[in-house]
Length: 460
Image (tube, rainbow, N blue to C red; front, top):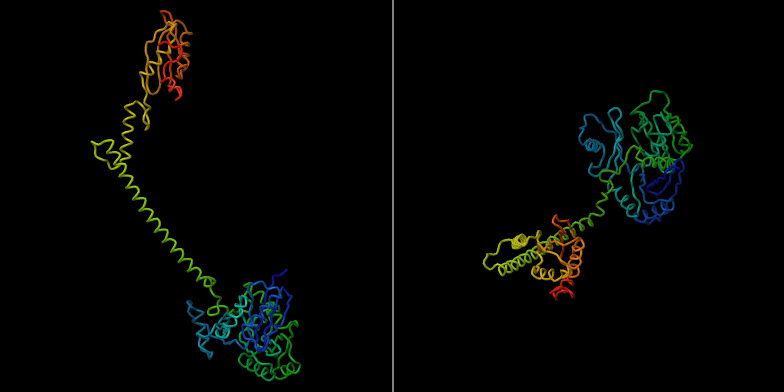
């Protein structure tokens, strides 16, 4: 199914709205009170659009021929830069209105000349603004007659040199060159004036191929048609019977799709759509200001906290220096007290034979020696040759009669709270067994029991 397109036909006597989907056109008149202002008229148009299924996308606004000014301009020796502005000023030379008050567009150049069309910005801008306020987005602005002619020329290639678009209120006469309009005359529905217009056009650009042929789009009264045939010697070729409004509605779909329907689009320059960012420019400025205020507040907070932390750090450094001077009263406080204390800890650990930064555990070697001697079995013949007591453990070397004796010594030491590994023994050449016992201090509870005295049954 073809996409839907909407056309708004703006006329002095009223408004019409058309919805087109392919070749199907639904055309409706907009009921508007005679005393309604432009805002009320736009609201009525929006209501009819909603009934037709409009959902807020762009529509085509078709203007009547009476609002459009036309003229042909010479396009020779135009500068490449700002070409449109140069063409506008050449068009101004042939119109009674200043270029600053016009919004213009031009058809492609044919044989060095181009047809220019212009509207007064002050007339069209209020119409677009009223529709926008009513919730209708105007995407394309084009004369209704140009839309209808574009569709008719597309349906019938290589048409005659004249095209007559007839409606109830007026008649539009186009001189065609290469299937494009070269001139345009919008006239009231007066037969005599229509005949004079065609005669004048033929005098400016005569046709040498006999009788003048004209493509008739719409419906002319029979008397007017007879006057054209007799008075202007025009052969009327009736189009396929569709009305100008139906053809314009079909062309609106192509115009909204960007296929150049109607050849011109006045939705440009002073009539261009407002920048979408301008609608939220105030909110964006407010957001930027609030963002800057937030950044300033965060920067101030970080500076205040930085100064606070710096003051706390200096206070802690003074406290460390006071502690250092209490411990080492004969020294000066170093710049980095923490580093100096760490160095002192490592030095003390080296003196005690311990690696790492923690201070070694203080042990009482005489107490451990007393406990070891008290734990030795009194009835067992043995010899203790070496006892080494240190912070990392206890090493006992001795001699016994057999391997069982070494195991009895190990069990006796375990009973007093020492963690003794299995003894390493070896047979001696002179008889007996040599043993080596490795032990470590026990738990805190075992140390407390050991501090109270020797185990029951141990020799004094």
